[in-house]
Image 1 (cartoon, rainbow, N blue to C red):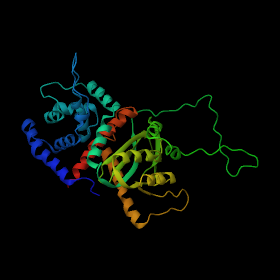
Image 2: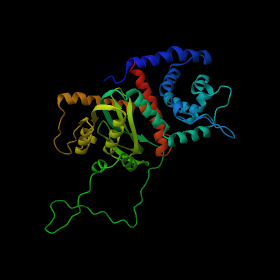
Image 3: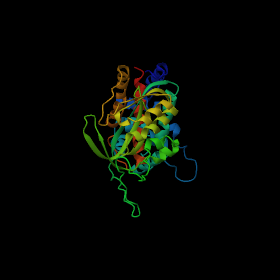
Image 4: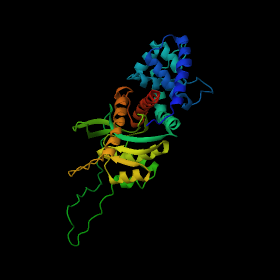
Length: 370
């Protein structure tokens, strides 16, 4: 489904192509296709409008945060793996330096300045706020056919968190199988996490999502189990390949625990008709929650040692649209830095991934002109 207005996309494309790029070529010389892609991404995202105001006070002025934010976004577009590689590229490439906003006659900020700025951007959720504004501007008033929901493994270079057992904690009592004896009292069954989530507010659900680095295990597309240390990124992706909502959790958290939270956040940004999810999300609670939002749930059935229920022919055709989520996960990892996580902590990891999601969203929006 074409969820954006092609005439507006072509108008912005022509302004950049016929006015901005020729002016830049006059200043810095020839631009490579990659640098033109950086220019288009920065012009679509306009991250400088969300950075802190310029310095006005006593003492040494800090480096302009808008230029540093542009540099981190360019790092994702160019596929640079580290901040050191970004600084080296800025030092050698006058065109990239000018595109990001740095003066050619002044020295570049040090690596520690880049690191402090990135930490500030991650704590302030800069990339998340810019991504939300981009989605609301271009897709907020359009009708989205399908939202594809999926989680993907994010490997991190840090030790997984190990929880120590409490010394005063009572040992877990295993629940007996079968009917209770006459006069025997048993504790009621524990409510499922999905049932508890449906009774919570959005803020409570966000607070309950674990965000520490730990070890996760899941089945890949070939049916083999894979394990990793790090996190798990949950994405809601529209038909056009644009990520609508992103959520980072611990690697051990099950995919279904992020479904309700993602659907509520996505419903605040766009209007969609169908929710597409794989067998990991097969649950009565998730189907009921999707219908309560006015959506049609298309969730692959998990037989759980029983008989599998197949889709109807028309539903099976619609379910094939879920491949957009897999393509978005693959592009985020292969092209926009999702595989090279060199920062530690859930906040910084989310900041790094969201800069890549911003570049991916702008690239997918630009592809709609075709």
